[in-house]
Image 1 (cartoon, one colour):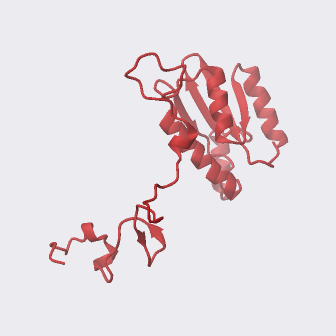
Image 2: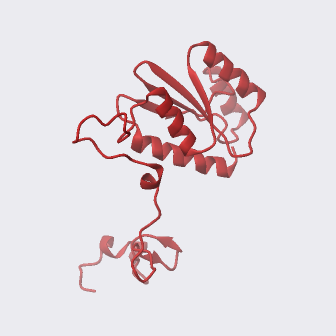
Length: 182
């Protein structure tokens, strides 16, 4: 799996975790995500893993959807096509999705219970429509143009500020040796 496809997979996983309503259930099938040592790959194959199995499976009462996640220009391999046909013959739905919106469209088309989706809203106490933009939005900014979360200048990451020379790199509010005296 290419790095960009791995990031895409992570975004879809986060979206599914936020938007699917129980009793809907999903999981990832870690098949082609990393190069495995030969002994590990052989053991997984002995346990019954089938090459070409789609990346995700989503189930809810009366439906099972297998989702193959692909990058914009990535082709489906012949062994993947073969597995997709076997799954369809078994009565499952199989979708090849290249965007999060495509995943959402397939779930809506098949009637999956999605948090806040118009079809799911039947009472005013339900949460409002959750769109992709609302789920994965950029960090808010204050009027000066700086991000609201501070930046640790030494590490170049967003997060709590670290004391200069702080004990064991603890954030200011988590340093066990800091009694608040400065």
